[in-house]
Length: 251
Picture: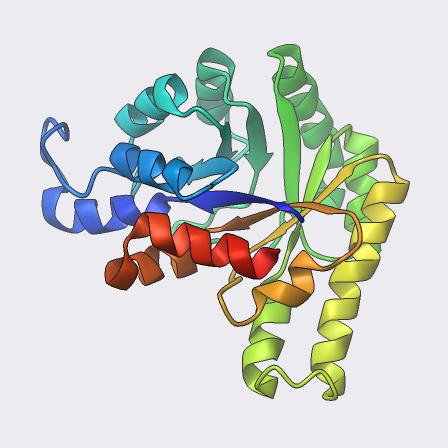
């Protein structure tokens, strides 16, 4: 069974809808730091947060506290900017995951184009590894991105499962539909190529309670990172129970 990393960004989204611009967030709610504790109690194997350039949800204060208080793996999603590199070097999360970042996007819309910026990625990976971090790339299920990630020195590749999730919704989960079978097959082949290149195979993006099982069943997948679906379910059943339900499906 893969490990489950719970992304708590959208707990902070709810908080910022009410408290954006407030000086101190210590009394603001819901607090993503408390959410991380609830996720751990529900069985989360890791906590993921994305500290964005525009600070639209997770704030610096959150990452500082999470690094001190989280008792499982802390995965920091980040753009490959000098500002974020400095933060990662100082706080030393267990994993630094490089993702693309667009100012106008609602959430991350695609994988990191490692191939097109290979020289820069080599520099960034070397710097993060020098700080003692495991370094991950969030990539599309494309062979040339896997090869570039290996050449850049990444330890982990997380395969972008958004296209699979879209196909699942369009096909109603019917794997007799070729577009859904093909979408799952692309993730599976990318995972095999990642492992053959000596990297860890993770997966994530748009996974939910309906579509997660086929991804969790793929050979060699080590971690799934899931956020929006779990936080959405938590509105109705609480975060501990939402995490427990997801882990049960993954098993």
